[in-house]
Image (cartoon, rainbow, N blue to C red; front, side):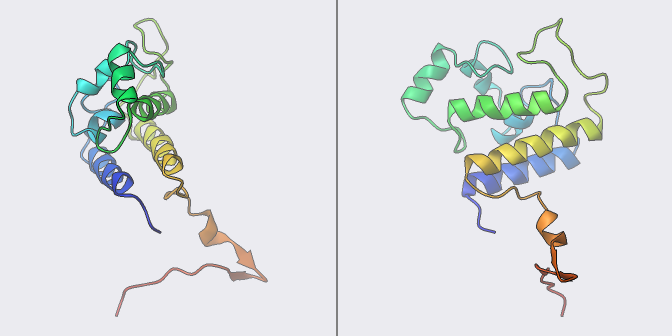
Length: 153
């Protein structure tokens, strides 16, 4: 499967963050976007409310100038973060009185957020979801349609 450079880079960063316990929805340097953007928090100024799709003045300026952050526009960054937070069980935009999951650091919650983000990243690049393995189980006349190639000698 052919992917874009930005997608491949984002997937590697998110994979490493998940497996190294550095994926934290309540930390803007360690959430999905924080990891994609090299654990910096400057992206949080693109919106006035964390988890909102509405660009702030700064966000609109960057968007109108065509700026990209590790390949992603300000609007795409806000979409990624909202999808991540929603899939982790947070009510967005974040507010101290909004609902949040009891154990947002559990691997199950993080995996749900990660899966939703990967689905969105693939859609943004017009690529089939790289986590969709359903084709591997399609059959015709009792035989698999698709075959895995092995690299074992």
